Every structure is written in structure tokens, then in C-alpha cells.
Length: 267
Picture (cartoon, helix red, strand yellow):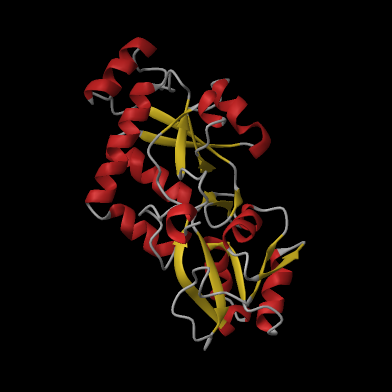
């Protein structure tokens, strides 16, 4: 189970404490993250970990009345490290997938990484559905899920692929493409930059059909910890704590689940 300071009770007693809410003041939850995925988890100039994931994790610990202890590790080995008891959770913007769910257990989602279109200001578009974009040129990065969506749902638009998303955005600035489709988080950061001042979001965010949101991962047998995290997440959403943290990073809703592509775009 999860870590305790030397003075705390044995693991079996800890499990009962999670289930009943009777946690000792010195209970420690080791929160595993990466540190190279801004603005979600990143090292600052002093080498301290910060970001949206970190603020949410600290809020969850505060609500559970436990102490957060942050542990960083490389992304490639983060799930093996969790299952080897190097820490108790992974809160590192990890997408919930069927494959990962075979080896770890996830909480409810704490955000959804929707994808969205951007276009130059003055585009005249009221929406970004397939009929709206007929005959227009849409750019996106190659070898991404966005390519599949454009090929499946936008057959009457011209698709331009780029090795890097930055190249697609440069062509949007210069008018070589009409729109770009990508993660709303990446595009949101770009829109706040000097280069992105040319453009704006068009239409609503939506999810690839396989997407299930982003959750906190725990070991599969740590059901009490998972349930405690879910209860804490519901609490911080209900009392406005979550929204306050979200507002420090993003100017758009990231907790409400967007429609899936099949529902939003039709086929």
C-alpha cells in the first residue's frame, strides 16, 4: 500500500484508514510525476516541481488530510516504478487507456485533452463541422490521431501534413492553410504568444473516439487509495478549488467531457 512515516501503523491498518477516512496526521502519499511536460508538470529554475498536475495533487492531499511527497522519474519507466512501490500514485497527465488499465487502476478523469481547430481572425466561420470546412485546407502534424479524424470525417477538405505542428501554425499565419487541428492545450498556449495573436479557436473542442480522459493511476490493489482520491476530486470540484486552479493555467473548460468525434462530427 501507500507510504507511511516510521511512526505510523502497518499497511493493513492503513488500508482500513483509507476506507473509513480515519487517517493519521502523518500519513504520506508519494505522488509520482515526470517534470518535463509544461504546464502540467515541470521543474522551475530552482529545480522544484510545479504545474497543474502538482497543484491538483496537492489539493487532493489537502482534502484527504495527508501529506504529499513528490517523486519524479522518467516517463518511460513511470508505470513500472509505481508497481515497484517507488511511489503510490502517478499524477503526470496520463491518459486513461484500455492497455494501461490492465496493469494499473485509474481514478475518475481530472481533465480531458480535447482537440480543436484554430483559424485566422476574420475567418467568417460560425462552426468547424465537416460541412463548414468543405473545400478548405486543414493542416495538422503527421502521425497523430488528428490525421485519422481529418481523413475519416473531413473528406471534402484538403489535408496538409507537417512533420512539426509549428510548421502547420506558421502556414496558418501566412495563409497557406485555412485551419489547423491539434490539442487545445498546445493551441491555447500558442494563441497567447505573439505569433498566435493572428488567430483564434473555431468551434468546440471534441475527443477522439478512443479517448477516456486523464486520470491519477494507482496500483491495481490500492482500491482504497483510489476511492479516497475520487472522493477528494469530487470535493475539490464541488467547492470551486479545482476551478480556481484551472483558471491559473487555462482560459477554457478542461473538466467537462467534450463530445466524442463520432457524436460531434457525425459520419
